[in-house]
Length: 617
Image (cartoon, rainbow, N blue to C red; front, top):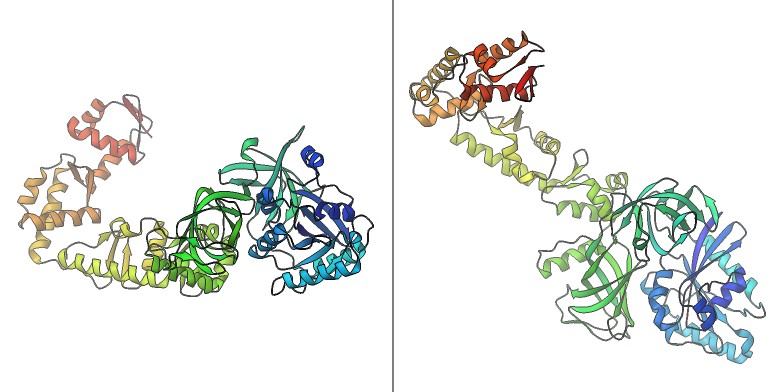
């Protein structure tokens, strides 16, 4: 059965709870205090079956003191059941609830003109005219206005029919993306443990899924799932769900936290967004403190205008940065509400543009950036975010920042984005990086023509965040680079040894080869090779890089034939346990060189240390 979610809204005592009870037979006032005082304090839940549809109803409190509870209730609803009492018409919380629904981007709804049994036809007609004028040019402008009575049942069938039509017109939500469910209620159930409820905003959750609790970061496991009191194996986007979870302390599972896919998202304390300030609000100064609401969460925050204006005027829209006092899980396109710090009234709301904006940019650049993101298509926006990453960006990070799965990101990115096995880099970044490396290599070859090239690690220092495979794939884009083992050179570079340098190189190699395991004095070898010390040391580096010579430690260099001979000496003693003294007897080397040789043999897995001795593997 397809599920649609509706939420009530309207002034206190305009019959929201009574209407839900008349439609469903369910009393959503579950708290003793609610029954004692005769008002709704917290959100309540009911459901109504309409043919092949099930409407999950979230009943919200209407009192001004409980607006934050109301905000938690209208998160993720498909349409609003907006109540106006015929005997009172438009009241203060009628206006505030209406503003909240509009700011949250709710697209459709029905106006229930309640308590019609208490007024005559003329009064009912006046109330209807007042409502039509009130909702003019809003998302409720063409909504049906249906007189109803929860006492006599008048109009309820007409209301059910209208709810059926609006529910059928709503498109199903995308269940293929990552899972997110803001928690709006949590409690302990004897024999089961922790239960949390909420509206599944995106994706799907299945039995035994491992999830993450945001912003605390704790891992939890799903032990059971209910959708409208029915045990199920999967809950998907657009459904109300109750999850039995384990892995987190009960005090962590509070309203305001969010259950989401594991190791995907990151909570944030700063967003850039588009703010819509209500006409009824006072001018909003730069740096004003506010109460920030998104999903079921609330946090103190500070609004900083990106526009070059001292205040945001009532009724105006503005690009803003909001800095939060505590982290929340927010994603682009999420809607938010801001309320004044004192008195606590709703003054505006808007849409998140970026949940991980840069911190060190001028206001003018941040403003231009916000406008660009707001006016871009998905493909353009993703490409722009990739272009901002000077070393590229892992696709997993972009997924967590956008809420999109990697396959969706890859399908949406334009051709100018390079894909390097899980790493993304914009073409402009790649070209700039290759150009810089080319200049660096050209200068290196000019200064050190005898060296084959630069070590890979040295060249990729300014690409340190990216994996080595990304660095190598980036080099492969330009045929002017040649990767040889651990070194990189330009294809145009050829070793240009003069005759005297070639002869000096042969003298150095011969000196080490003749010495065997009795390492020669390096300074004496270089002094006797026939070229100046600078070129002699360059020739030494060439021999080391080519493998002709092997460096065992800072002070010990041997010819590779000596290294092979040493391995062969040990090969005939496989399984034998020996001491450092034994090794000195076998090789004839002093303790000064025996220790670095043995450590090299350990690294080569020819020997294994066993206490004060070693064993030939």
